[in-house]
Length: 216
Image (cartoon, rainbow, N blue to C red; front, side, top):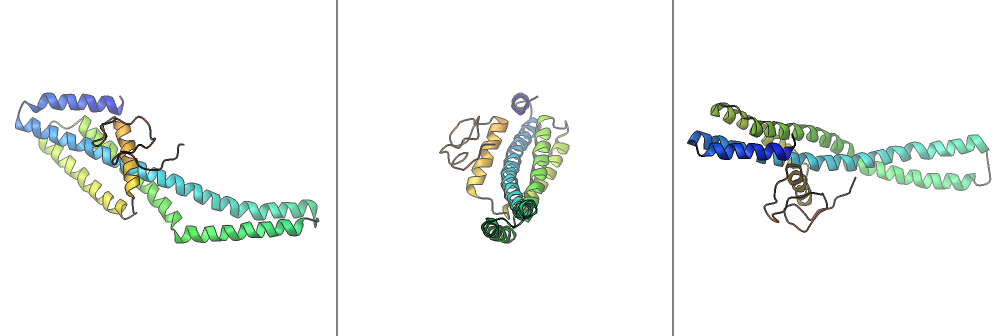
């Protein structure tokens, strides 16, 4: 069953139950908060997916250049010996090597490796939280106290995760990108533009637009 089908089925069920008693109304309110928790944790997971992807490309480029330049020069020397253009080739390779050293230094100062490792860890944590929020919203325990306890437990985990994630300097544009991805995933309307996103192409919306996004 898709996220949209589960959400519709769950919301229909809670709306039917809401009029029965204050207990049912509280259960509905908790389930609604669970859906919101799934939305926001999915959004955060998407943000760090994009960060990990960008950092991985940079690290691969640094590694590739670091191996390929000296290897190509060595292969040319072994194949052709001292040929006329060898000094020029060495000069070009040295220039590329110097650039590679600068980029490597930049990656160390910029914390690319640590940033990539953190992003991968955050993706896993937020994805699991989103799945747990979604499961609790879709299939809540019959007992209200158990539902409340499970929701509070997930909320504490989410708050701890958020504290760590926000220390990574998440930008406002990234938050809007993540929100659009989450709205698209759960087929929910944006609170600002009142549209249900179907693609990741950014709009001018101040909640789910105004960000840069590279298509895969």
